[in-house]
Length: 397
Image: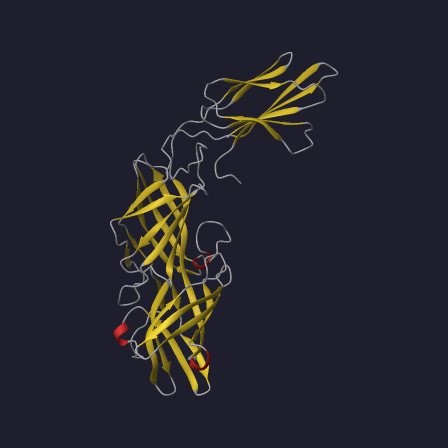
């Protein structure tokens, strides 16, 4: 399905050279859209965190269970069982691509086995749905695979190997982390991890230099968690269709706690391959208000808008209001001794295709001419068939 509205006008001409006659049938407009201005519209917004949340892992050893906790807060007190830990594996700008503090704790002996830092990659990037985002952070897609990293402590350093498994449609998955290897292995710790994602409508009204609206985002798999509030983008003057700027905003959750976007502005781009998607980074001053310290800061906001009132291939989200009323196309056909002349009246600049086929019971229409009118009307000439029956139709988009 195309991402822009297609406007069809179909003209069918049957030419029978043996009987020397022409029969013309105008079959009408199959789909038509003509909008003078952009009213309130609705797009789909997806907000996902680049951190993964780890629940406690356990290694069942011969001498008893040892637990694993990750945390990016209270690092100075990681060894204290009573010290809060947030389970965050956060993104970095290096390789490995994620990191956290960790503590291994012997619950039987009630003592710390090891404490330090873990640097760990998530699975290799996969993009099965071809939307430009890593499937690992999209709940709708499966997030499985293996990865490697290292752990570092004041005692020693060693490798870490991870296996991940998360089914498509589930925000929760399982992990297995092996610290060390061979005779120096500290065990394999198994537990669950969570992907944080919010999805919902973005209601907007587009202006000539800005887009104003509001979001109502529900957490996937935990619909009681909500983020809602105003949102406004300004259009980049030199590239207003493909680049927008999101300034500082404040949203609230179901408990009326405030989530503040931390910076003054973020750049958003339109994916010119997918046409209908806009994306950009969003950093919160604090992405998890249930912990005492700031954490879960780094997110990505994706906006999908299939509204295209004037059918020009640019979604209404960033298009100019009243960006060109689409003219209803008309066509006249005249027969010459050796040619057929189509006199086409259509919006200048739109794509016009003349297609032909030998039988209306078939579906394999062949494009014999494709052009963007520079005049209104514009005459296109085709060679007159010498025998048989042919049908033509005109497609304007």
